[in-house]
Length: 390
Figure 1: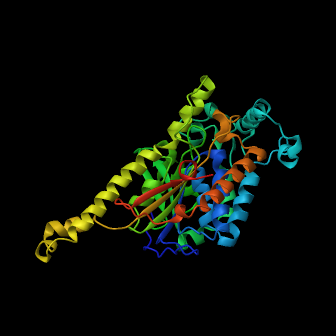
Figure 2: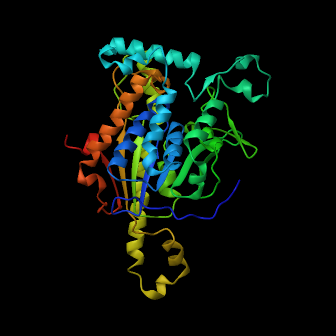
Figure 3: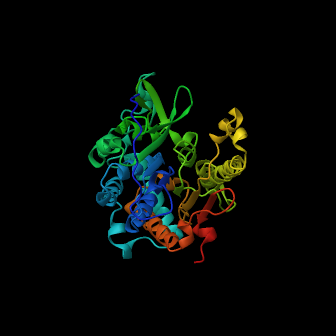
């Protein structure tokens, strides 16, 4: 582990009433193009995060954002997403929209075929089917522990991401992974580590599809095995600052009751990977309310009590900092099913990108989305689906 000195992370360009602007990116495979669309809208609004945290596909998007100049980020995101969704058998659907399948049933069949292509052929510049298959590999070898290999992803990251820029600390960067042996959830953070492609790959190494990634003698899997949403890391492990966090989720915790086994599998995956986002947010509100209340109480103590050992200890956890959480959540279409996170067609990618872009554009139209909280706990949330008037 290479430990670095604490860096001074720059603030966003657009004047906002916050010290920190964070972009929090959930894992979700092929759905991750939604996050790229959200970032494009933020960049157009001159909102440039000074902290980006991700898990799995969110870690890859985060690396591309943190590892490029602001003027190049959208271009590099688009290059990545166009590369991994290239498929000569299916690209016609995006190139000629009038010929693209219409209606839920035709589109569902198209998506299922696209997902089957990914299972067999992988995704260019991302992953490919392991040959020979893992059952024919030697026990104890890394090759025998996954169906796909991800060496292409390392080359893609090295080509699209400037890791020197990430490690220079122009933006704080954090990605979550799980230590295979200990089962502990860890974050690789450029505030403490020298970030390499392997750290990003580890965050997205979901077994048994992808192999564990070795880092400094330990092996790591996808952080989504424990928590698919890095919000907790941002609000609890940084310096306490007035924070505006754009939380971009690819799985909705809320949904309809399933009607068949296919929908059961889809709903199970949505609940599992939404990572109890709402519960964590409510819990954090309670903690922050306690900090605010404690800070107010300490301000009323006489000097002789304020200097006491007990008051000094309490003051270390008391503050009046505020947190605004802006939720942007991808809402699945009727034709999308269990395979939506590994359905890598260009057509679906562009739809996911547009959905993220327009969700962010509509959110930013509402001034309250960027306002400082003025409630007792110093935490407020904004979700267009619940709080918007459109």
